[in-house]
Amino acid sequence: MSTHTENRLFSRAAPWILPILLLAAWQTASSLGWLSTRILPAPWDVLKAFVTLAESGELWNHMRISTLRALSGFALGGGLGLLLGLLTGSLRSAETLLDSTLQMVRNIPPLALIPLVILWFGIDEAAKLFLVSLGVFFPIYTNTFHGIHSVDKGLIEMGRSYGLSRWQLYREVILPGALPSILVGVRFSLGFMWVILIVAETISAQSGIGYMTMNAREFLQTDVVLVGILLYALLGKLADMLARGLERTSLRWHPRYQPQH
Amino acid sequence: MTSQTPTPPTLKAVSHKGGQSVAIRGLEKTYGARKVLQHLDLSIAAGEFVAIVGRSGCGKSTLLRILSGLESPTAGSVSLNDDKANAHGDVRFMFQEPRLLPWKSVIANVALGLDRHARPQAEEALRHVGLGERAGDWPSSLSGGQKQRVALARALVHEPSLLLLDEPLGALDALTRIEMQRLIESLWQRQRFTAVLVTHDVAEAVALADRVILLEDGRVALDERIDLPRPRHRGDPAFAAQEERILERVLGSDSPQQDAASGHADATEPPKRHLSRVA
Image (cartoon, rainbow over all chains, first blue to last red; front, side, top):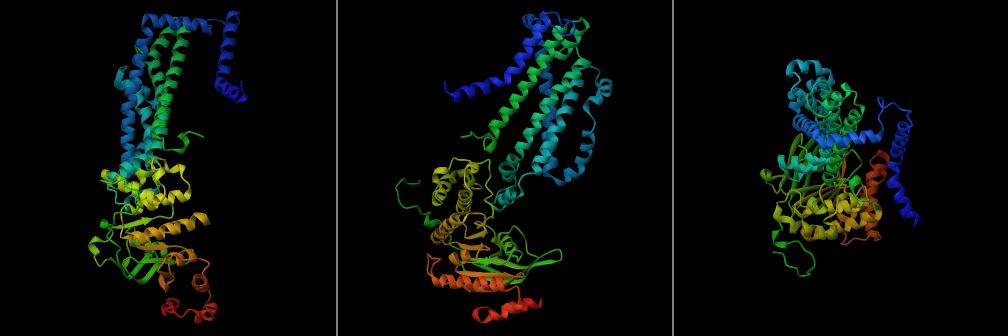
């Protein structure tokens, strides 16, 4: 085996060394009785709880509901953020009319609105949709706005002098130029989406992963609580991978995404 | 349909519109209180290659941007072929930087603004600048000189009757520059468009232009015809003499004493520039 392939293998395995060591230490500590199962159940017990929940179908049901909430909130808030960002980024009049108001609202943490949201919507689906939409709106809005503003003015001037129509200029120059920044906004908002949803679901819900963990807490099922937390981690990672994939396909032209020789 | 016969590459001669003549009358441009161009008169014949030289801030880039329609004059007029209605249609601008769209392939950059059926023309234009093989690559994989060649192909695929070049070779290394100058000259000889090149390199101006114009304080300070046969060689004594004379004139315009001393050498100098001192 050459040192080259050895190095490759090592760099592949390296990120997993620490988690595996931690997991082993955790399992040992639990088995030896150093850790109370009420504080932290053994990884093996967490896995068993996961299997039980999966077999009963309860897990998938909660996951489906949480994912649906996250995605519909993302679509609504993100879509609106993109639309308004494009509008204020492209039209000076829309910017003066809307931007300072939006910047004011931006400084209110969405979670601070929870009491108000409960008063308005109760603990209904609408409450969670509202909170998630609000949370994902601003990262996408701000990054779209800045993306459009930071498009190379030289390229726009070139497009004009080469006879592109307004729409062509938008489609061929301005939108692709703003895309890297818009995708940064998408990644930020995907992370934010889960944070908001977790809080919304733990506070008021009758289904979803957050509800499952809160319910388990009342019955002191620490293993189920841990399953819920790990699920959020997994879903968050999945969302991030999705965003990266999106970047890789739509920014193929970018030197950062080109194969290194 | 395009045939696959290996004939030497020439753009379809039938569609050539030839060059446009340019007439600039009393052109003025001010930015706030600063006068960049002052009552500038200049005529350029159809198919002529004119180089504009001058120190930075003399208004040469502004003049070019007004010719292209990127900026409008404060006063005066620019007429192309004496037809003001159709002023900026066939004019193409080559910028100092390549300004290629990084998210479009090389060929899509050349075909920018053309309709879908024009791809063969774009491919042909790319072959003319020697980059036919790089059609599918991203601009970021090209060198600086190659990028400017793509920009040149993008300008020429429109078969402009007036090509404006704003120091497009300024950022290239010496060898690439000479290569590009030869390429521009050969394409100009083939397509016969009118060319206006802004440059700070007097040797480049003498190598390419039929006429070298020196702008000073927003006016034409020197208008010199270059009658050397093409292709021109830099080692040629006549070339060197002419370059030296123009360079001296550009440099000498700073101090009036030196100006008087070198005055006898410039027999062709129009008396206009003494007026500019008064203003």
